[in-house]
Every structure is written in structure tokens, then in C-alpha cells.
Length: 241
Image 1: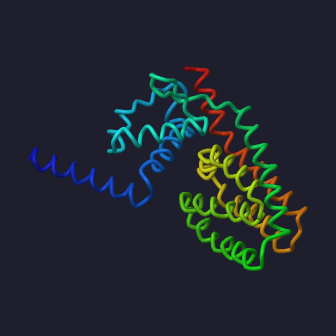
Image 2 (image 1 turned 180 degrees about the vertical axis):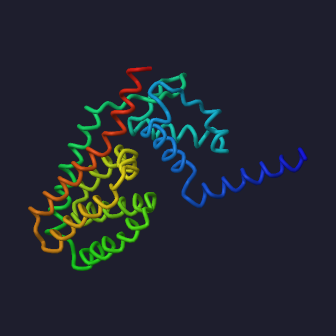
Image 3 (image 1 turned 90 degrees about the vertical axis):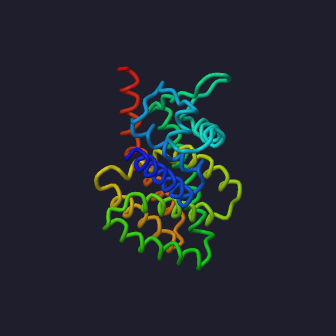
């Protein structure tokens, strides 16, 4: 019986490893999983992130764990000093708001430039994919919609046809990615996000840069308000710990 259990455990580990590989690189999967746990409060500010424990948890060596922790540090979610264990940092509402404020301005610029510069094919693709995403909303497919949401915004950034703006907005989005994903756990958020995207798409199809910028800015403001729910919980827990 022991041999059977051992074999089953080994098989489960192999399956999980294959799932990680199918879903993306091991480092990317770990970054996303740990970031989500931090944002949703499953990991609290001050919690230690031990390399050995994380390597065992994800069934990997310590090398990709170190890389994942480095990326989490770049996001501002993890603090790691030389010769010390990494710890979960406190993301305050004030700091999160400042990042979203910058993001709103950058996205407004991208939307305005996209309305002015997108090619006919780019506009058509944006519109078609937006309409297709409605099925994800109806299905309540949070993970799939989150992936589509990233693609939607990437199209706006590239549609601006400005490499410098693309670089700045991509870097800022990377730091906010866990919070932007977390918003879709809130009731009704998928439908509201779809409606907000719709306003941006309509303005871009009409080549109305002013309306596109305003719609994009308001969209990010809504995302900021939704995401702040998780930051507020984490900050309260940090004060009470």
C-alpha cells in the first residue's frame, strides 16, 4: 500500500510539473501564483519566503525560485536583503494609488494615439476581439478574461505606435499586474470591465482621440478602485499583526 501511495504521489508531482510547463515557464507561473497569494491576503506582510520551502512547493530547484523572487522584488511585492530571507512587503493604499494614477495617464495617452494612429486592420481586430470577449463574461471565466484583458490593453499600447510610451506603460503594468488580475474576483467586475472596454473601442473606431483618452483614464480609475479593496485588506492585516 505504501508503494502504491508513493507511486501516486510521484505521478501527481509529474502531472503538476507538466501543467506548469504547459501554462508557461516555471518562473512565470511561480511569480503569478505567489503574487496572487500576496495580493489576496493569503500571504501577509512580513511573511518569510523561504527558497527551500518554495522549491518543494512548486517541485522545482532553487534557481527558478530565486529568479521568481527577484521578479517579485521588482514588482515591489517582496523585499530581499543580502544574506536574508525574502519577506512579503506592505503595499499601502497610498503607494498603490500613485501607481494607478500614473497608469491612468499613460493608458489615456495610448488610447488617444491609438485613435489617431491605428491602422484599419488594427482597429478591426480590436473591435472583433472585444466583441468575442463577451462569451468569457457570460461564462464567468475570470482567468480567461484576465488573459484577454492583458491582450486588449497590449493592443492599445502597440496601437499608439510610440516605442517610448510602450516601454513606460509596459513597465508600469508589470508592477500592477497582480492587482489588475485581482479585480476580476469582485462580483460583476467582468461585465463592467467589458462595458468600459466598449467605450474605448467605440472612440477608437471613430478616431476620436479625446473620447478614447477619457474612456481609458476612467477605466483605469475603476480598476484602481476595485484593486484597492485587496490592498486595504493587506494593510489592515499588517497593522493588526
